[in-house]
Length: 407
Image 1 (spheres, rainbow, N blue to C red):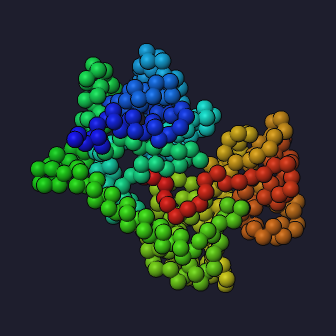
Image 2 (image 1 turned 180 degrees about the vertical axis):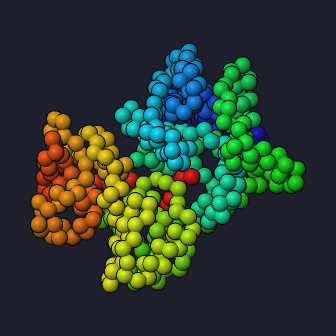
Image 3 (image 1 turned 90 degrees about the horizontal axis):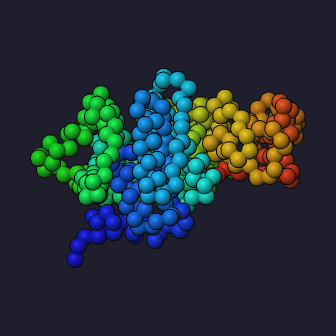
């Protein structure tokens, strides 16, 4: 019998039966995403929507988005272009673009009531990511297989085609005489991923196939899941409705080193937001500091170890800008209730002074100051975390668990 796990159309048909409702596909115009869009559209015509994120980082990006628009129009596929305007070109621009891309896609999916968004990563993407993280001396999570499903801002994301090679996806397009866009950065040896991509054939000649790398990553994923289970069993759910993590400091210090690091990384991800993990020395230094009375910041989080508890909260200075209704505040908070006209959701900040009995909430001052408040013309309307009986309620969209965001 044929191996259906390597049949692109069989994979697409199986996937659309597992997901109910309309499905979004992130399409850059490259071969992988264009093939994924075509396969899913053939499997579920009328249920597939497409979005192209225009990062405005290359002169051709707008033309590429228009090409995808024409491709979709010819097949009666709804298509949307999601523009991103970087504030500047400084810092780790690829990382900033990645965070922006997933945020734009998740917002689009929520507003369009989509069941989720497909990302067209393939087998070579997995192998390249493994080698890149190996070069960074990554731990188990970094070397684990990219997850086939995960959530960003509450929206499910899927990678249904990771078992396929890039060639298999391109063959789908070639069979239909469909052309695609080649991003010039995919051939620029300035980027480590490109250098590693060119190395894969040499590794195959030496006896290390791409499938060997992806299997190794999968095995490490299984180890990672076991560690997640063990950590959950050890600490349970250490979160509070104020979006902080609180656990007995003695319990934290009694955990094995690898599990302490794991807890810190999960806290950084859940509270500080999706970002690359801190470097090893930073994490080690933080962990060592927490064995005494200390107050440290890292990755947008405030870590406070006292005589009884370890408390991990949002760093007030790192909180995002105020946002209008319907937009996640600080990338994690969602407010229920009708906001007054022109009102914005921002951090409570120094206005906590208006609540002299804030300690009665049971939450830390830092969490309350970093938490959401409703403002209108610079006037405080409400602080939902301190006024739970008011007509506005706030909750963190992404639930805390010991499983990391996908890499």
